[in-house]
Length: 343
Image (cartoon, rainbow, N blue to C red; front, top):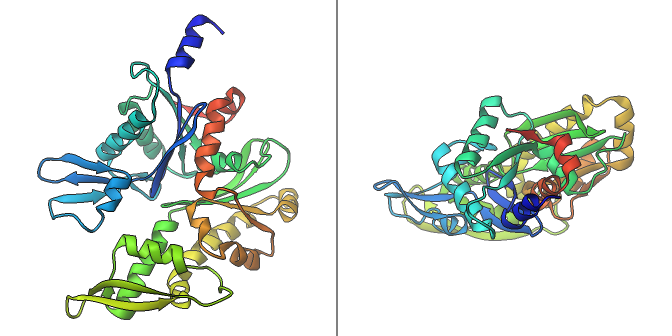
């Protein structure tokens, strides 16, 4: 390694980013995961100035005056608001870097498997405008599989189901490539929306995103729990316009989530049906690995096991699997050559 290369490694801070619909995670080469924050930006509509980004912006959800809006610039795994995404990326990149701010970092970014070339280009452009030197796009299913430690370079079938905020990526991987895959824009955020709509329809009560997410985390499930649980929730009575408190059960929330859970399981079924027989045999032995925040829905693994009659395992750190895999790719030249789409 020449003197310039040594100096570059010392001064630069190459990054791996999981640019998610719900959360953005940033991994710095040699330093691990530095940032794990909501993909939310609070914007003043009058001045077009950003008021807050990430965790601070999420705290503002549903609590801001009318001229301040909390925006999710990513929708269904792709960029919905280019300028705001660029500002958010720039903020997280700046926050992550220890070295010289002169040398632009090389950035590996995880993307859904089936997004269009236009959508890929938008991610690349946002990263470049946020001061990236080189942008490498990696499919989230591959990144997630590497992140959870699957032996994807071997001649054997490995199945990963990554349930993110905006997309669910299902893939069968063998010999360093995706054999068959399906990406659907139904994931964890749709679970929150389903809870909002259920409570609105059944109880005529309006609840916010944060409340819906809390309900999902605390009592949401995909398969009956060992013991039934209830939760008290507050919202606005739509008939009278006043605050109201109700109690909901895990049975009700499971009913609310059924369509979303069913859609994700169907995507797994379709992928299994397209899998070559030899690789199917491997999946019978190795099972299905679940990753992503949505995989933390209580008893989703049990439900999927019941529906497919296959072994199902939850990743050790489902929320971090994509960024950890992207981080390994960033640190391994061979993996970078194999999987990275360099722009």
